[in-house]
Each structure stands twice: as C-alpha cells, then as structure tokens.
Amino acid sequence: MNISSKHKPNRKSKYYDAYESFSDLIGPSESASMFIATKQLRKDSNATNSFELSARMDSQSTIFSSNRSNSHNSYKKKTTELLPPQLVHKKSTKPPNAQNFANVRLTQEIELVQGIKSKIWIIKFSPCCKYLAIAAETGIISIYDIIPPNSNSSQLISNIPRIIMAEHTKAITDISWNAQGFLISSSLDGTVKIWTKNQERSLFTLENFKRVYSVCFHPIYQDHFVTASDDRLIRVIKYPELTNEGLYQTSHKVTVLCYSPNAAFLAAGLEKGEVLIYKSKTGCRLRLKYKLKCKNRFGLRSFGRKVTSLQFMDEDYLLITTNDSRIRLFKFKEELMVQKYKGNINLKCPIRADLSFDKKFVICGSEDGLFYIWNSLRVFESRSPGKNGEYECVDVRGAKKSEFTCFAPEKVVKAVKKRFKNKTGQKIGHIIFSIGAQSNLKVFYSIL
Image (cartoon, rainbow, N blue to C red; front, side):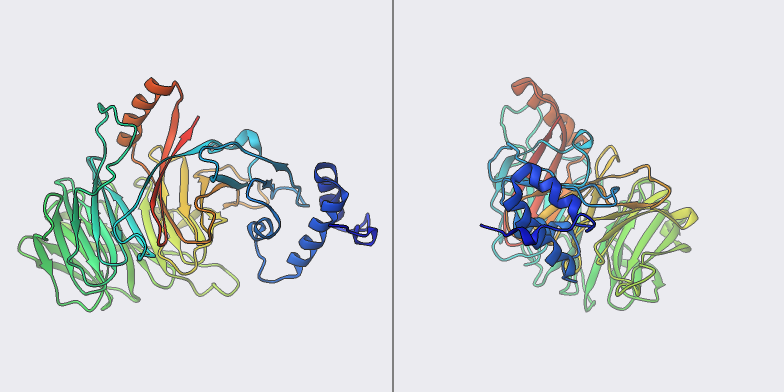
C-alpha cells in the first residue's frame, strides 16, 4: 500500500512518537498506514481499547504490547511460536520480563455435550478434585473424571463424561459441590436439584419458584444450602427434609451467592452492583454485617450493573465480577476496594472471574474471545491507586465469542506437574480450562 508523505504526522503531534516507533520496525509506508488507522480509531467513540485497534489492523501472528504507564502509546511487533500454531498470545500490557503466561500451550480439547447450542457455561471442580462439573445453558450438566496422577495418560480429563444429567428444562444458573460429593443446581425453570455423581436422576427436587438465580452449599453443615430466587429472598434450606431454616429479604434481586471458606460469612451479589455480606452464625442463621458498592463514580454505568460472580480469597478479601467489564477486590470488613482489574469485556454474559490456587493471579473470560490474567495484588503508583490495567491475554479460538475460564485447583496442578516433569523435563505453573460460547472445552498448560 502506497502512502503519500502528507500522512506523516507533524513532529509536535501526539501521534508522532507512535509513528516513529513503527517506522523503525515495519517501515515508513506501513507505519503511515498504522498512523492513519490509529488516528481514525481515536476519533471513534466506540473504539475504547487497544484490542480493537490491533484486531482491525494486525495479522494473527503479530502481537502489539502497550505500556499504559507511558504518556504516549509505544508499540512493538514480534511473533511467538506457541503450540498449537493457531494459539496467539494476542496482547500484553506488561513488559516482556514481567509476563508470567508467555508460554501457554493447548494440551487437550474436548467436544462437549450440547456444545454447539450452549452460549453460557459454568465450570466447577469437586472439593476432592476428582471430578469436573460443566453446566450448559441448555439445562444439561456433564460430570467428567479427572485422570488419576499415577496414570500414564497424557490427558488431564476424560474425553467422555461419566454421567449426563438432563432434568432441567431451562438454563442452569449455578451449581455447587459439597465435601460429600453431592452436586446442587439451580435453574430458570424454578427448581433446585440435588444430584450424586453416579446417577443421571436427581435425588431431591425443590420447586415452587418462578426462577432461581443462585445456589450454594454450606461448607461445614453439609446438609444445608442457600438459594436466591426472583422474589428477592435468600433461603436457608435443610435437606433431605427440604425445610426453610431462614428467610432473608433483600432490596434487589440476588444474582449470586458465595460462602467464605470457613463459612463465617455469606456474600450475596445484587443486580444493581451491590454486595451484601452476612455474618453466618450457629445453625446457619444470617445477620447483615457489611454492604459493598461495585459501581463507577461517573459515566453510563454509575448506576451499577449485575454482579456475576463472587469468590473469597480468604476471610478478609472478596473478589467480585460485574457486568461493567470490571473485577474488583475488596477488603470487605473495611468496605474498601483495594484493586480494580480492567481489560476484558463483560457487559452481557454471566462471565466469572477466578483466583489461582496460590492466590497470585486472577483470570477471567471475555466477550471478545480472549481470556485475561492479572496479578492479583499489584503494587501501584500513587497516580492511579487500585486500578490494575496490566494484564496478559490469550486468543483462544480466533473468533469473537464469549469465553468462560477458570484455573485448575492445587491438587490437580500438583498431580500434573509430577507427571509432566517426568516425561518432558519442563515445569508447569498453572492449568487453565476455557469453554467458548457454542464451542468446545480447551485445557492449557502454562509452561515456566
């Protein structure tokens, strides 16, 4: 493409630094092309992030790295050799020496039941780390076996599910395991069902709801669980009696529930960007203790968006995902936000962020077909306290489909580490599970 010299920016222009950086790397002609596209995108109110810029102007084998700490954007062009070839480390806002997931490799791909039809997925490991439950928007739950650590297989999970549960008639909204190996599920069909991993039919069914948005087992009292339905009530229920042990009214619809690891607290996310923290007392009774606001101070989303997931880091910190493309880490006892993770797109889907087993990283899928990884506790400059825009992201499928992603738990990683090191001599840092909308499950190893 021939670009006349009139497109070269003036030395005083704020685009001149970017133009000169590109000229050294890719030549003046292509640099001028990049300059024109950059200038046009910055005038475009819809082009709000540099991913859109690279998606329009770059080929799949090129990566552009940007550092937000500079006053002007600087760009670098490089290629990566990852396995398989179609996996592209699309972008990183970190310098190369600070990238922890620069070598991510696809190791297994599984075609899921109803994979072509489901646009929303939920992934949950059992507490014993021997089973993986995957719930689909179509109302089907599949249970997969994790391959034992003493096996010689190169696969991490079985290619075929051990059991398929298909009693729900509408989309499944949440699933939860307890330590005894029972699985509970909630659905928009108005039912809550309890399952065992060995049979297709549910053990118990709780009805008489219009819609149920979330469900969670009590970590200590294994015969208790909580539900959230469209009547704005949190119910504490005991099974097999299926009796109400407590009812708690909320101001708005509850979209997600989560207990802390020692069951001292219950977090309830609301549809308007608020999180209620209840103190859990003896007998599973609840008392409202703290209230967190996950809203932007200004802009179109200042009224608050739906909370899509909650996860306790420990008994002091709570990770909150909302439909404003933000993930927040709160020191909830002080009602203080200490981190805000930015970069992914999460405006419509119930995408959930997840913490790594060592609590060092936060991962989250996105509606642009990538998954993003942040350092969970980054030291900030005083200029922008709490805002964490430094991430690494991986293009999973080369298509703009929603990705639902999670880290593997510590027991699974340790078993694979031992098996993998003995065969190849390489070390594994973390294992990532990712499912795309209307697509398959992919398992990635992060090679150190």
